[in-house]
Image (cartoon, rainbow, N blue to C red; front, side, top):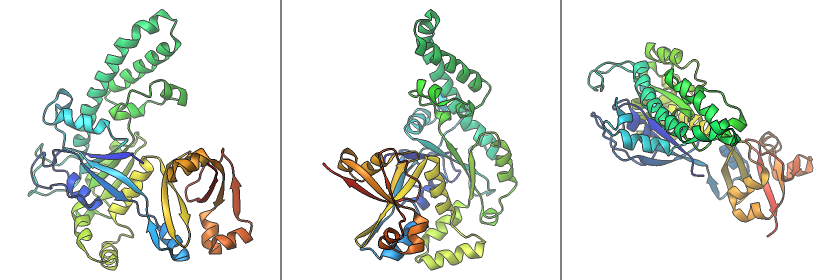
Length: 366
């Protein structure tokens, strides 16, 4: 499923260090701006304890987790909306992503330079927000110029609706707010779905801290939390340098001991991947048996035939019905046969909306 999260931020905030922890692809990581020139794409395995449990029950020959794509994008500086630095490339790359992971430096270290000379994550956030907002404002003004005449004649209802929405977007952006703060209903969003505004993309703020702040955060993270209070956005605290150390450990047991010593139950990387998955509005269904236990990715709200199509297009074309077992029932009863004997297999048709964690078996005919 070709949905991507883009990692963005100012130079030297820890984007590439974090990306290296997430992916086997190794982005260059160095103490100077623009060490990442081309966007690095990593195929990231999504950790899911449910898949591990299903594999323990069925002992299959293969266990296949689901994945998402993470893109490490070059650092942005002031003036990017006017093409400064790598601005045009940065903006084009971020426009191609579906969601944003915005990394903010929330640690003090005199040995790692900051492009603006001091540590202030709220200011850093504002710099990127402003550049993206300016680019969105340019997009909005260009579109208004195109539809204004059609809207004013009164004969084109769609143009009138688009014009009204565009004006509302313009007002929001001119206030220094992101487009995502404008509330639109489903029909309004459909009317301007092709805008692809940069500040309308869902965002996850990642506060990159030192090891001492990995559990409780610090004054910088508290400032970020206050700054995003009205954005309906999630924030994570991650110590990227420490995560890099954890990634170098050879065994799962060693990594867990390291985390326990820090007072963490789960690595920041695992929490970040799961948060990115949610950010993209993705969910997981499973297929499991003696041959294979596998996680499959689908968009939240997907109906059964389209979920079947994730496995193979023929499954969707010839969809007849789906047999569905709830994850909790499968774990409790211990097998498909036991679920069948207990009447815990649901028979669902074309209108069934797949739920996260469903164990699916599709019947089709082509």
